[in-house]
Length: 331
Ligand code: SF4
Image 1 (tube, helix red, strand yellow):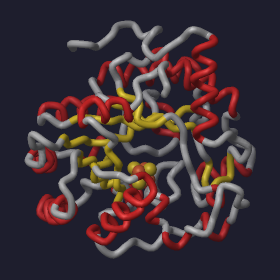
Image 2 (cartoon, rainbow, N blue to C red; image 1 turned 30 degrees about the vertical axis):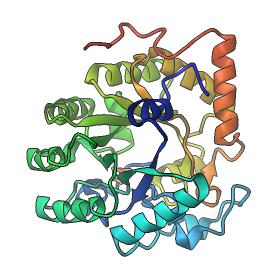
Image 3 (cartoon, rainbow, N blue to C red; image 1 turned 90 degrees about the vertical axis):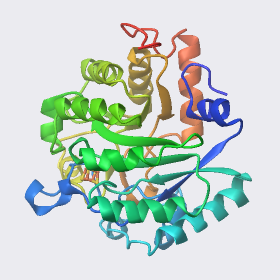
């Protein structure tokens, strides 16, 4: 449907012959960056761990039209009991809603390699035993991918199944990373991707457009860092300010702002143009439940935003990679 960037859905259809649906689960992990020793986590992190909407049982009554609800936004969600139960819930929902037949398993909440390898193996094994998943996806941080963890993840690669590591970078600017309290720098990200790829694993990097103090040059530098790292895919988020975060305090006291629709379209186009054409785009916009979202409150929904981005790039005759320094095909 979209022709100006390399979509994840077209990659999956090409590789597996039909759509593959992702089941996101909470494996019950924590995060080293939220431990007391690391000053309370990333400035944008609300502690909900990005759990999938169909797993938010306690919040299922809220809709896109919901007002900001400080009490709920400040509440960390209760954890679900078993990985198996979450997978069954996700598969049932996706099969009913989309007639899904093929699935990926995504450990997406918090830092999903932050445990002993024995415990990790027990939890991953439990998930992978439920369905014949086409992909295993594990979200984590550059400082949580030791060789023992990478050996374990590599052991799950089969002819039928790829294993992806989803790695947060957010920005290539070390000053920004310090100011949002990421607890790692660009060099650690680069080293992590190199080691992950040595194990035959694929990498999807997460970045944020519109972090405080950042502008065009930062977005271009981040696109170049993603290209240079060798990551196969990227998830792009526009900065969302959610309740219960350090950025929420800054936003409410006027220290930081967020980009509106026009600036987000412009920044996303700029980022895509500087990104290598072979990198898969897994996401282009943040989706925060509205009762947790402080800003931006006036913004098109995902399908409208993507349509407007496609129209804008058509009218400007731009596409992913057309301003990248070199294409990585064959690299
Ligand atoms: S690494 Fe992820 S879970 Fe940990 S504090 Fe940052 S955003 Fe939150």
